[in-house]
Image 1 (cartoon, one colour):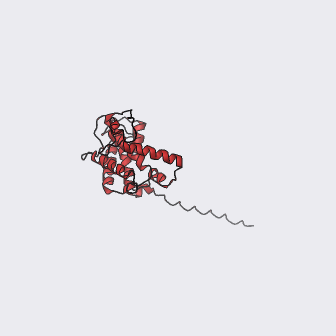
Image 2: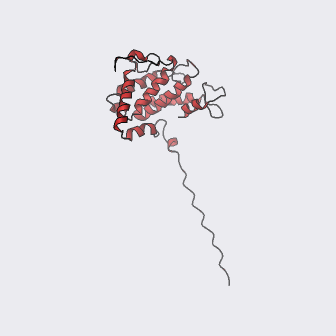
Image 3: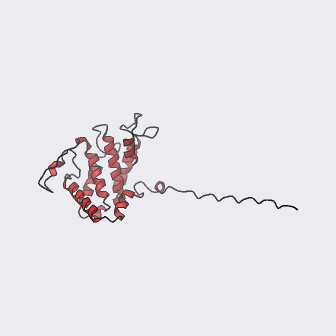
Length: 212
């Protein structure tokens, strides 16, 4: 008897190529898990009250120019209570502290135009950071100390969230220049530290802040 020839198994169809959604969208318009998670998550009563109290404390210690004064914020005490605050920080890090405070407000998940209580604080902080950016190289803040690269990295992250929350093209343009400056500090093997142009050494904390 003649046995039939075995039939070849059909070749598997090629898997469709995946496209990185972030790579196809303009800078600043990618999904922001940080902002959207807070915007779309219902807060438990207790945690909501704690967050509101913390944001009110921050707003009460914001300077008139929109910044948070790292070593002089106590001058704004008295708005929320009689006792002055303590724990001054380093004066060279006003940019970083202002950016962290701004991230806290944006992390509450409200767009500035919809936040009746803190919208003004958010917009003043954004304007102050924009004014601190060098028109020459895009660096946010003055290079008072080598660790001020941390301030630039945190401010860049805050501007990215501000673009997502407002859609303001001015902030996006500033963000793009800030990212360009950050990339100018990258070492050939991928890491970052304090210097632009880089000097060859890197550390994980500086690199983490820049890539976050």
